[in-house]
Image (cartoon, rainbow, N blue to C red; front, side, top):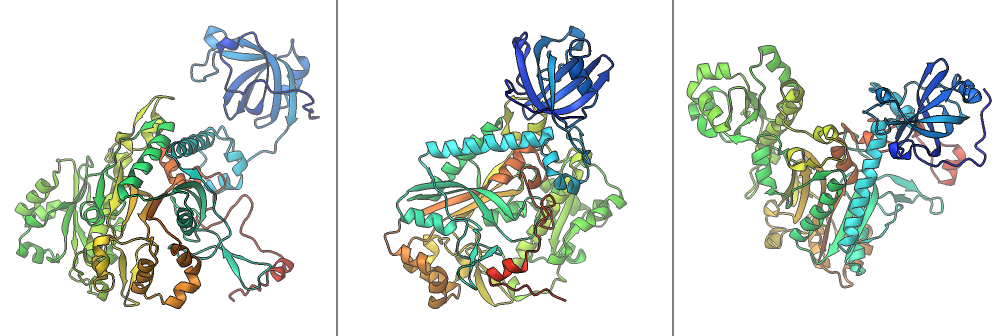
Length: 623
């Protein structure tokens, strides 16, 4: 068919805007055909844009030319409709549609563009093949779920930006092409055409720049910052992502917490969710002991110390290391499992870290009846709750890194707690749908009535994690390594131990976790050059290396640097939680696959020899 030109026609309303109060008005709507229904003399088109859907009617007697065009249009054709808003008959009202009381009596239909047959329709309720969705992302983004996610993202971002502005923060942009600095992951490098053999790096975060802004006297900075990290992808990680990044001068840790809680509460409120503040706090050691994780999910019961339930003889018979933790984890409402169901759980448990587990309480009760009863009693387990014991494996060989350092958990202790924590989370996910064991999840937002407030305390449970170890011992290198970026300040009370007892030094840093996901991290920074040099020295970084890598920053520290600190929270993860989405790919417009490929634009790709020559680069592929 011959396509129409738009001419001087101008849209008067969006497709989701019209109501009964508009009856009698002449309107112009434009959008995509969502559905087409041919009833002979009457053709009904559901016209869609991001605001919603309106039904338009093509009557063969009233608009024969428009009806003829309607016989040829198909879903996803782009059309414009001119007509009068009419009230539907009572028996034709669609209560499920906001526009369900009205329809458009069309007087003119323009077909602005046709479409190829896509591999799926935006009106499809479920599209199983994610690779197809990403290949045809421009079609996928038309789906109502995706349109909702990005409207939600906009509302959250706007609320956060407004809140930080109200708190006195200035939004300042920092460079995308910068210098390679340590941030915990590989940098993306950009070769310089003008400086042969030299490279820019894309920022993993604006860390050094925001500290320099504090030195520059800006006092309170924030940025909705694009960041880049060359690391393996997973559901909650992308190569390029967005942070709510902020820094302030003269803060205490509590000051940063208060600012972050305010803007996060504002962002959640924009999604109709109320967050209770202040958020609870817990130290790293306590979090590992209670939850087996430094990003605990508070919606699940924590770990319970059940060592008192066993005698030394019991532990020996069960081949449990008495020097390591013995903990129980409880998943509510699972009920009795068959032997096969229990065996199917085994792959979820990490056996490589020197931990073992017992989930067969029938066998335990038969051999150690008093211990079995005591374990369930200590764990507060109801009859239908699934209880598992996790303990240390004495067969695990002790390594240098297993040494117990004064003032912190040993690696072997952490391994037992981590194994229990990971198992706790995996089993909760597994039994959530089958037994309702997980409790209330983020789905409460999706299931809520449109516009209705949601009690965030039911579904979203944030927690601050504090007092992380400043250093981690690398047994292979036989040296202490930074557990965080090297600009993190140690606790003042621990400064004297930097060189003599690094295991006891606590970092003045903090993470914010929610529902088992790390939302972000921050710290009070080092603001004195002598302390920064001491940290470099404790990490084995020579003065020459420090000067080569951070000379400009060390210089800046000599020009009246105020005490300062800040935090960066992942905006993508915040939206992912509030959207009830399974991965970041649902809330990032053009994401990469798990193999780091953009299927729509087919990136990465090769470039021409001329481009490589201009950048002074030669590609050497492995044979």
